[in-house]
Amino acid sequence: MAAHIRRRLRKGATTTAVAAAAVAALAASQAPAAPLTEGSAGGDQQTAGGESGGPEDDAATGNSPYYTDLPPLVTPDRPGSSSNLPAATGSAEAGIPASVLAAYKQAERTVAGTDPACRLPWQLLAAIGKVESGQARGGKVDANGTTPSPILGPALNGQGFALIKDTDGGAYDGDAVHDRAVGPMQFIPSTWATWGQDANGDGRKDPNNIYDAALAAGRYLCAGGRDLAVAADLDRAVLSYNQSTEYLRTVRSWFAYYQRGTHEVPDGSGVLPTSPSTPTPSPTPGGTTSPTPSPSPSKPGGTKPSPGPSKPGGGTTSPTPKPTPTPPPKPTPPPADTLGSLENAGTGPLTATAGGTFGERVSVRARNALGAPMAQLPVTFTVTGSTGTLFDGGRKTVTVLSKADGTATAPALKAGEKSGDFTVTATAGTTRPRTLTYAASVTARQADAIVRTDSKALVAAPGEKFSDAVTLKATYKGAAAAGVAVTATLVADADKPVENDKGPHFKGADGKPLRTLALTTDADGLLRLPDLFADENPGTYQLVLTTEGGATVVIELTVEAAEETAPPEA
Image (cartoon, rainbow, N blue to C red; front, top):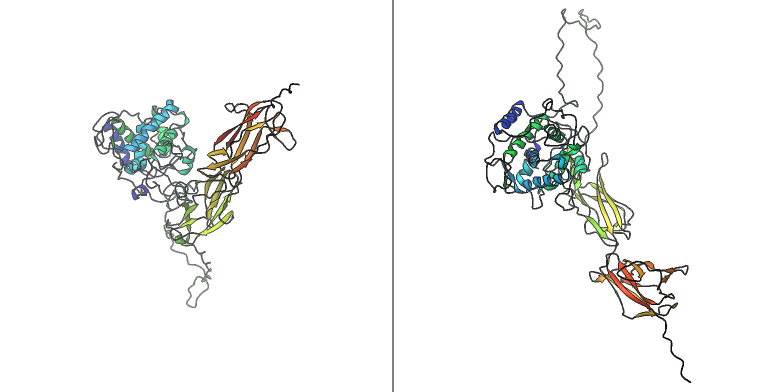
């Protein structure tokens, strides 16, 4: 992540001059935004009524640092909500990158359809996005709205910031020790786990995607039945995002600025903020520096000599105390040898058909406490679940040493015969182990076609057995489909495939009629049906066979009595 993101100001650290500039910006713009509510200008910890959009006494960003730049003291060139202005029209500061602007407006429309009482304005999302990430680093996103690399805040380790220990195993922020704010809207992982959205329809809730992040922010701001057209509710919403009055003033300034007008600029050409501040870490747990004690002044009579044995000259001396041996300190591993985090090294979706081999292999990357790749670290991978899936070689647990780039890749996974979900867990470290868990699934074997191997007519007399056996073959993409589940049902009409209560049937172990059977193809994809029997009801019937995968074949069965022949004439 760019250095300027790492150096954003933590809550409460904006100076009085910045606060005054924020008020000046609002006044100069003559913005129509609602005023700050009474009571919201107190201390930085105030939350305007104590309401929070997320977990109690928490904030969406974990109160992580943010940009402090204020908008220009003049309004944009074009007044109003200029959503249809051409690119590069108006001042540079008023420009919002195209994909980022589209994401904010889409979020406004989506929330308006599900929570119209909130009255979420997209300009509020734009203001928060400006303060949190400079509009996704000036709009550096791909065609799907995802940043090319994650936007990460500093580790929330209590050194100048809030202390939030890891909640996601590094899945979102790559840090398995402490949480970091993630993405264009800077959600901490625990908040994203609750509020994350899939707004671009790719099947993923990605905090680094501007569409997903903007909708999540909109829903978060609307939480608790807020009406953002009401000043008090808007203040509470912003404070729930970051519990700082100076943060509220900065967001309010940009909100008013964008309400006066904005325009679209090409992705990647947005103006980046330039005024972050670096907080001073607290050297003591309480956040204050302990004063250095001053030496005590001498008493009015001078110093009192210490009693001691008399010397020949008549003076006295203090006895020399015996030195107390200091135990040697326990050695602390250097940061380069200390495991800092375990992160996903690009593992894709883990899915395979029963009996097949997974195309993806689970891969992780170990980093030391300095953030550098960590080599020769044992990483243990474990399969948990009831699908019968194992690593190559038939093992449920394997240990792999990480390579020079910190990556450790598990052997290929061989899917079991039972469909369902399972997990693969990677674990490294001993004193404070780091873990990552991957979801995986096994799908049933499938066939996309099933046909009879012959075309003989199937006819039987009432009460008799059909003399010809029925054999079928199932295939998938032209190859024999072994082990595929097939359902055989005897019906009266294939257009209404409901099990019939008369006509041809199979026989169960007890000799009773069965008209539905669950079968499985053999190693060659072949399926030979059990014997079929006719009852006393003549007519035409259908046998419908359907495979896992949706392939279907209909076979006609006829039950007819033999024709009666007239006796020969005498």
